[in-house]
Length: 80
Image (cartoon, rainbow, N blue to C red; front, side, top):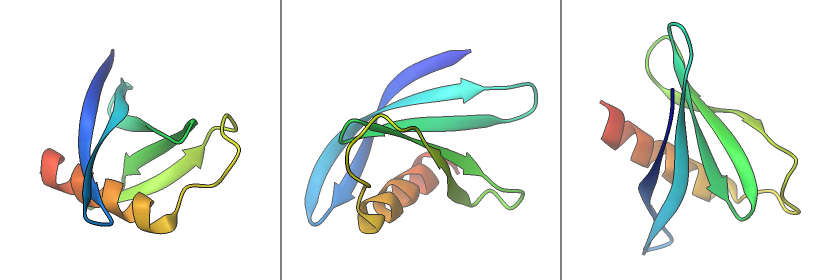
């Protein structure tokens, strides 16, 4: 099951809507978020804290770590 949705993220005082996709597996799931042409994969650990798992090589530049933290904060708010 793969479901697309828009993830609201506040970054540097501005509200953004990022395209995200839920990727369900047998007993877990990951969320892919498109940021500046790159697809970043997020996964929850055993304590349900989000982390960046991987980045697909589709974009030219690395996303700002502050933006990744903002995405994680939004995932926390919308999944707990």
